[in-house]
Image 1 (cartoon, helix red, strand yellow):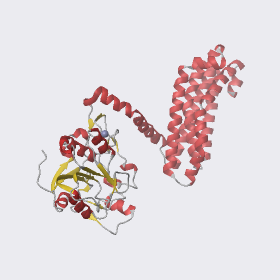
Image 2 (cartoon, rainbow, N blue to C red; image 1 turned 135 degrees about the vertical axis):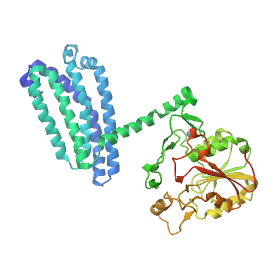
Image 3 (cartoon, rainbow, N blue to C red; image 1 turned 45 degrees about the horizontal axis):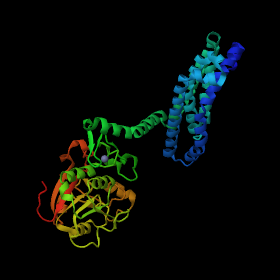
Image 4 (cartoon, rainbow, N blue to C red; image 1 turned 60 degrees about the horizontal axis):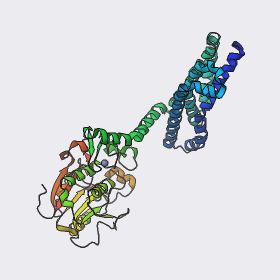
Length: 449
Ligand SMILES: [Zn+2]
């Protein structure tokens, strides 16, 4: 603006000052987000909490970027109205320059965050200064060349160009000094959030308008789906041994009821045999949402049991204190790998199931080992994570799981994910660490077809 003042008339300078003032107001989002997040960012950096620091940066950038983009588009569309309201219709001449200037809203907002919220807390103030100097130098030279001929259009254009340069340099320094590709991370972050936000609409569209044409189906919640969503495995390396999931298809969770392949396999089988479940005494260990929802929707009632979480009965599967033969059907998924003595649990299940009844059971199986692997000396979460695949698992079963179940005196029928309709996505990839089998146990020979 100063250069404009030297090189052009007062009228033009005055016009441009209107545009510049409006622009300053419209860039407030970046300043507000920066001011409110800065203390937290500094604290996170000081405590070397890189993960949270990056997350905060991503969130702030996404917020400022999206808001500024919307403000920019809205202001371009209503630029005439904005000028009219704030300055009067006699200043319409500034409209083209104002519109150009609006393209600086996004780079200014992003530089606020990249510079103020990342470079400064990370002790790289000089990098921010260099970026700003580069922008100022560029602006000076470009103005010198273009203002005499193009006046306020040139002033607006050089502002956009120099703000963009500052923004690019800030991100470049962040990548160079801190090794963080913040642009890429933020784009992924925005893409993921957009997917989450639009999910209910896509599910609605899928079921109401397109229905069965969709590639996937969740039998637990009876919804047709565009796709299953990514599981949390890779995001929780302290809970899951993520090595066991690398290379497998991670998109296995139902976005509506959170069912996993093992739930869908079971419900798929239950659906085909639904008559067996009517008016029966059913005991459901470690109840899970997707299964409970399906049962209640189909009028199948059960008694739920858990040792830790809330359930109808609080009991230890190794010693239930229940009467002999007190249930017709027992459902016991992913429990045996958590209990101290799984043999005791199996004997207990055999005692409480009625002679005509059956048990549906599943647990994680590692197909790369032959026999069940357990080791009493492994007690810490870290060691359990490494050895058994999850930080609260006490063992992992192997290829002979069906034989183990038989050894407790059961007839065993194996249901494999690969036997089910592929629409329900019943398997996690071509997995060695396999969640995708369940077994139906009976004490006498029995067919289910
Ligand atoms: Zn579902």
